[in-house]
Picture 1 (tube, rainbow, N blue to C red):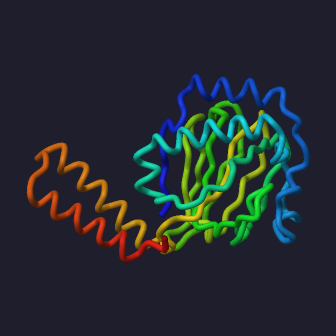
Picture 2 (cartoon, rainbow, N blue to C red):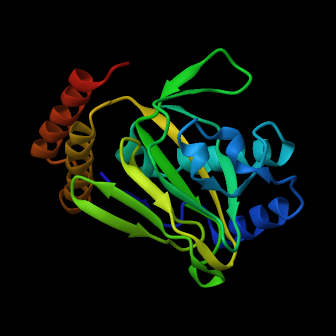
Length: 226
């Protein structure tokens, strides 16, 4: 399931993050790439342990926790600390699949990458190229969202970032392990949750809505791995 979260963070938050990132110590993005993807990755990235990455990562965590759309679509169990990258003219990232397991820096913990996320921090008109291309069972999708918007997609998807030919594409990217491993089951739960929310707004706490809510939680109970 490919899912967009509009305005996960506000334009004011985007501006704040851009100011912090303008003073950050960017380095070669190959540092976090696997053996295969390092051969296709050409960009800049913030070191995982730098103060700016930790500060802005905490702000993104807070925004994620306040987003009902994100919680419904992702059903997060564990979230990898947000990373930050920058593609300038001539830089790109060829087709690759994200590592299946990520070790959380500075801890003994690891997570399975069920979902990948990109939070755009540059407006589309600030740069040419830099589209996120995602291949899945429904075809190829080109994603280039407004600053503050985020896209979620299965980490099993083949994907790439096209060459930037003008300006700079700045974004945060990270992964999560979902309570529900199956993308198909997450889609069913998300559709059911959104329908329940819509019907509740129209009908209030009708007996059938309570019944549907019970169906949702019983499916989540059956499919959840936690």
